Structure formats: structure tokens, C-alpha cells
View 1 (spheres, rainbow, N blue to C red):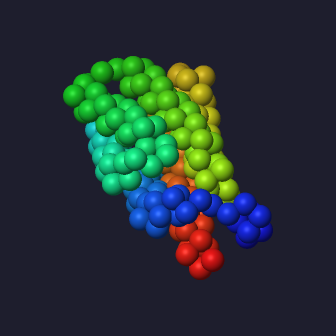
View 2: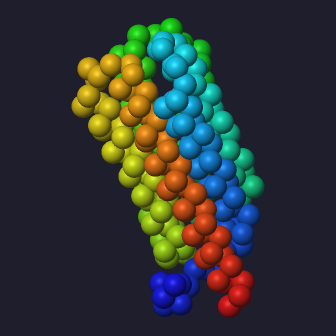
Length: 195
């Protein structure tokens, strides 16, 4: 695209992007699968919902940490490590205390989503000069998480089924944004290689 030709991505970012884009696609695919499961499975108890969300958060956190460790020393790695740790800790907390009340779990989910969203926005805005065009989709996925968390906090009285649907829809949209991000990062790195 013209964005790449007018403001090409840095060589250092291109090196990282060649191996990192797949992790965004993997995370996106996991989020979509999780969203579909939440929408079509007969999840009828808060405990089952907590376990499903906890497992998703743990896996997402591990994927984030592995990606950050693989690219240690590159810009924004500290934020990615923090993001992975937040997801991992959230997942562990949910799995350790799945019997807590629905209200407690909903607040925890909202706070996690807001934190992750803010961290993703900050991490992607910080690399905008290195990755023009590609950073936007990372910021979009962060904004989706932020909006989801705020929506949940302001609708704490919704029932379990409505919450599951909300989480499922968010996960699918979030997953799609991450997949687009991965594809954009791959295109950006390929453009540098070709150039």
C-alpha cells in the first residue's frame, strides 16, 4: 500500500515481523474458537463459564509470553511481557476460584479486558513509526477489548446467557482483528524483504 512506500517499516521491525505475525493469527484463531464455543455450547453455570474463560486467558497469556521471549531486546517487548503476565494471572485467578459469584467474575473479566485493551493500544502506538499501517490493527484489537470491558462494567445486571453471548461476540470480533493484524504484519515484512 502507499503507506508502506511513503513511510517504510524499519528493518528491525521487519525482522521481528517475519516470525511474529503467526502468533497474532494463532491468538486470533483461538479467540474465534472460544467465541464460537461460548455462543453454541450449552454453558449454563457460572463455574463452567469461569473455567472456559480462565483456560482461554491462560493460553492467551502463554502465547503472548512465548512471542515476547522469542523477540527479547526488540521495541515493545516489555509491554508484551506485561500483557502476557496480566492474562496469565487473570486466568489462574479465575481457575483457582471458579466458584465465586457471577458478579465478582463479571467485574474481573471487565477489568482484565480493559487492562489488556489499554496495554495493546499503548504497545501498538509505541511502534507506529516502525510499523506504519500494521500497528493500527493491534490498536483496534486493544480498543475492542477496552470497549468490551467498559460495556460489561456498565451492564453488571445482565443475566448469564446475555453475558455469554456478549463474551462470545467480543471474542470473535477480537479474533478477527488479531488475524487481520497478523496478515498486515506479514505483508509489511514481505514488502521490506521484496524492497
